[in-house]
Length: 89
Image (tube, rainbow, N blue to C red):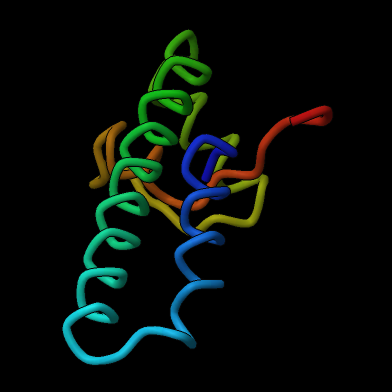
């Protein structure tokens, strides 16, 4: 998840102990929304980063990185997996 969504989620987590009932539910809802936005952003970044690889090369790279995958998966499924970022990320 990128820093754009991590900081607000941490801020919401810090406010949670002082919250009760409906306030806590609202905080959890906001945190979930931010998490989902971050997940979508990460997927877009990874798809862009890995977009130049042929599907077969992507599968080989995923397997080399220790991510189990097979020929039955399409590109999006492979990219959605937890892909390690290159150095410097």
